[in-house]
Image (cartoon, rainbow over all chains, first blue to last red; front, side):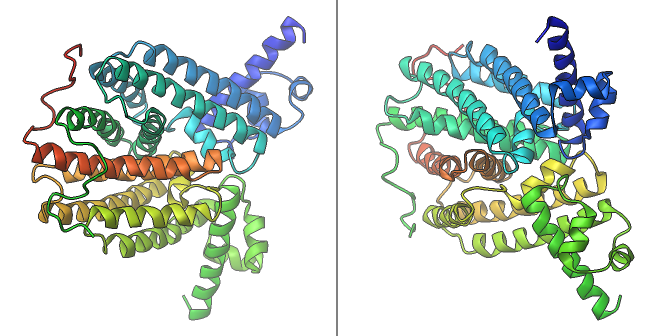
Length: 215
Length: 215
């Protein structure tokens, strides 16, 4: 591809990502994208034979930006207070839209995962990359004795990604970021309680109820 | 509306709900719905002037079924083991589709919330109803001394809804319900650790790190 061709392609993908974020994938037509990116139809079809190809390119574009942003923030986290600052930052970003549109990546996953196996696989890789960033944070917390040595980092990292995604959805639905902050808080407090349970000398998982009425 | 008219309307909504679950709202045309519900176009338009009206009816239909199902299950929960059985049941249901389609309610929320204020408000009410079911479970656990008296039931209930929704999305993206089970497990284990922290006599929230390196 020529440099000029690559630039045209980038412009199309960027315009499509913006439209799909606001109107959803289903609510965005190729005509909308052609118009918003200020290219001719023939230029458009030179880069993207169909909507499926365009959506895949949007997932790459959106996903790489999201993961790069999260990498920059999460790589700096060394403490539970650092995790709280990360939480403040993503909640703050989402508050700029009053929670509208949800997670750029999660929204695409919800709409596209069942429709296109190649897109789904790419989305799965992106979520795995995000989860790995959490696992690395948790690994540092573990190394520094902030969370227990026997904590299952992969499972906790899954819980963090889910708390973030569920939080985005609740914020989107209520136009209020409070439930997003609450759900991520619960995940962070969970780490704190794990540390305390270990410190207090009781292993997890051996006792379901303090009243003895569990059945 | 005549009884026959109501029956036609129900058939349209049911067909639309099925198509939108599989193909998304954006991937479902009114022609698809007319064809799948075996009505004439004029019959269809007698009930639904446009897609927006149809989508709102689908949200009511899907939401009421989802909340009724969850009410039936969650009303029976009295213990942490009961919560684990509830978790097993929703994960099992989702495993029947290998995680495809995500949460019937969450998927609609993701796609529709930003496009139609009336639909968004209905979705918000449905999520609030689901959260209230969790708050009632947590209230019973609290009453029976299974979780601490000072636990914030509304916040924990938000955390549960988010863990469920995030879990559905990860399952949908990975075609595997394991991350859904993991994320809900984290929420349940959190309750267990809350109980233990209280029993061990240390209040939550006053101590972020056992190593003293938090900053």
